[in-house]
Image (cartoon, rainbow, N blue to C red; front, side):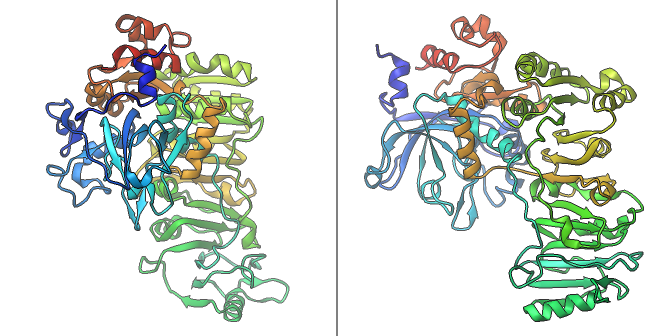
Length: 583
């Protein structure tokens, strides 16, 4: 029997002449819509090479809040007059094709469903869905060349008809989480890149050499040398290391530049190799000089004398990596870096109370390889208790010990003593940091086990400094500091496959739902961190205010009855919501 929801899924309902959207006209929450409410506008026309799409579900993200707070000062929007050209937010989008341009009819059809890889590049320019391109907080939109024929191809990824709308929309944030466990690091000096060799003051005679990555098969195009003392020896020939580098570079056609000091007037550097026990005054100035994907390689058999200022924002956003080894082979630092969780290992998710923290906990339980111990903590938030409520049973089913605690409740001394006790003093194989605090990063560093990896998932801005003891990178413990931000088309594709195969349940992250009328309050809730999970907006429903899932019991009892266990969003609950509230 056909009903409103079935017709909706098939895109059989007539396209209206007007639709609702929530534009952002400038800085601040008061600039959302008119008096905080959606506005009405004509449904846009679409051309022969374009598609008319219907937005079905949108996940709200803290990145949306950053746009609201910054307005025209946001890096993606500089130069835009938002009063005349308002922004429509919403980049975590599930959509359906409802109109196909004449020239596109062989490729697309009404009723096809897609998600959007939001980080859209077109003719070398970063546009992004929900930024310069109209986002999901609108009922309808037109997609054209930028999305369909962008620099990386088509930014639409197909979704099966039976996949839930929220399930699909949340693929985008989930893809960012998944990307953090699928990072591929290079295992040598950047071929064709710039390598800077810097000798520490106390370098001494170490017999340094380069075992691989500086030969005919692969080598930098340019080498910078600063204070590489002649006393450093390269291999059994005993020739001065600086002289060896120059000879090798000349044979390979590599440009060599000698510099007397570390300064900013250089092109971006792919590899900085620091020889000897460098102090903070040498390492701290390096971070602004590194290219995206750059590597700092600390090679010293003597301890670094002091903790070092590290730009943890660049580790997160720019894929900067810190490696090292005791020497003498510089290339020995470039061993494979484990990005997946260690099988049967120990994991600490630091700052786990928020939506992304829940996702990392959920992934550790649902995806292989799984840990044997999973510790989820937060400084003070009582929301951390929701982690135990939602995931304790599934963790137990997988044989994982799940421990949930806050530093405020236990007290700092007891909190860190408990971490030591849980790992037998060995530390954690994986520490995933979501706490927006350099101090938290500094404290957690001491709890990395030998071979451990700290993944800085938290989006601290570039220039945010944490003072870290980097000796564990180079003294044989071989810990690694890595970071990731965003996702690629491939990450999105992998995530939708994981969701549609039932391996990961993205909709399990939903904490509250709303229509467009509740979007402003939903964004405020994201800003204030009210919910431990995601807020999903259903744009085709206008009047539904922000509703936490437990409140559905009173407001929409038929929807509530289709939640799993009274607290987990399901495709069945979503279908009932749309069946009841679609106009």
